[in-house]
Length: 216
View 1 (cartoon, rainbow, N blue to C red):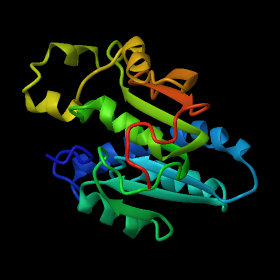
View 2 (view 1 turned 180 degrees about the vertical axis):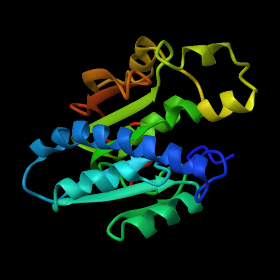
View 3 (view 1 turned 120 degrees about the vertical axis):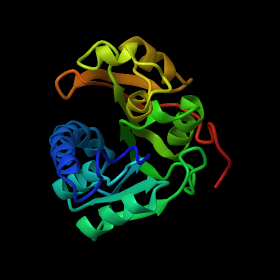
């Protein structure tokens, strides 16, 4: 199952409708995330969308500022190919979120939305995100909100295909607790996309550069 896809996949009507909703979500998310990296100075800014699917949000952030270099990482080559066809300036990397092929402290912003809920180890993936973020860099995680419009999915058995596609649902408290690592500072938590998702924005102030991963 392609978790970034829907229905009949690219080219189908169901996917086109799903993709339209995803683009609306990413326009709002990119407008929220971009100001978080403006404070990092005049040098070229680097962002990483870790577990990106087609990486729409990264393209939108880069389009806001010519000094932003966007990289997306995903295991699925088909998703990366779609991103490369859409945006020739985006850097696509096929790789594992649990062991990303980047040096420590490589990016000003490391983020994902609707990704971490599908992973067997949230903690391992999140520590990798922290590892590759710059000191004083920004990390954002967004996941489906347990008490929003997705509330009925709490009743669906976890092995059902719908639950597998949806992933784990989180309360705001659960997400904030999952993102607690020594040295990280929570800046903001929010509901977004009509209350379907909950996200937390953090700063790596004081966090260990090598947390959760090997040296470069």
